[in-house]
Image 1 (tube, chains in turn green, purple):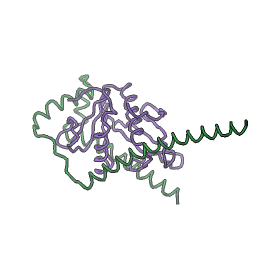
Image 2 (cartoon, chains in turn brown, yellow; image 1 turned 135 degrees about the vertical axis):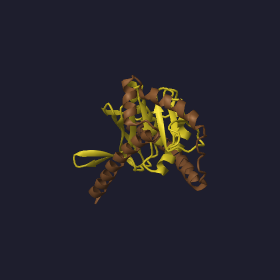
Image 3 (cartoon, one colour; image 1 turned 60 degrees about the vertical axis):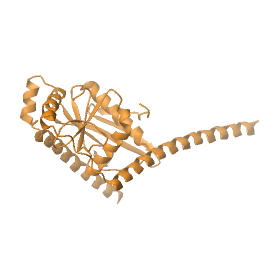
Image 4 (cartoon, one colour; image 1 turned 180 degrees about the vertical axis):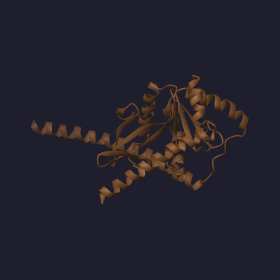
Amino acid sequence: MKAQIVENRTVRANLGFDKKIEDAKKILDNAGLTGAFLKEAYKNGKTPVDVLREHALCNNKKNGKPPKKAEQDPVFNAIIDEWCAQAETIEVLNKKIKRLQNKVKKQQARIKELEMK
Amino acid sequence: MSAAPYPIKTEDELVFSFVSEGPRGRIKKVVKYQEFSPGYFNLAFGDQVQNGGSTAIDDKASSDNGDMKKVLATVISTLELFFEKRPECAVLFKGSTPGRTLLYHRIIKNYRHLFGEALYIYGGTEEILIQTFFPEKEYQFFWVAKFPLI
């Protein structure tokens, strides 16, 4: 059963990454940065940073419109905030636990030492 | 960087791994840079899963191992290693689902300081490919670069 779960996860993972590569290519294509365009830019000695910078300079001005405001979904936002806060709390507690475990170890060592005497 | 990163194992120039340690145990994480166009890389991140002899990354896994900040600090360290060899390249990353992209947005918003001054992070949408990152704005993907893009 466990093996089957791992296998499913692998299939899901592989499918997800092929799609991601395609999505990433589409993102550039949709912005006019097609494979041919990028090849030409590369031939002309332009690095990806140069290309993206030029693209931002031309298109962000041309486009002019401000980026979309985030959709305010208070429930989702609250869940994510809580999740982040919980992750922080768990991290803090883990550190505390480690510190206390170290203290206990030290005390146990001290007890042993005293018992030996 | 306020959170110390985990020790990183370099599998090859574009693949890094580390072990997350927390209440849920030791979980092997992989960060992979996949070149989707010359000089443009997709950042893939997730749990390493085994299938017989081969391995893959599960980017939909939710480990909840209580070490998010440390994991993020480690991913940022891999970005620094990546850009050491490829300073002129650009890295794009996107959540595996819209919800996860929103989660990444929230994590960047909260822990942006971890990126330090060595890396530049931008947001992107279908309409505008690269935008200055504003915490209150919505993005569909993110860019990281060693040099400013805007």
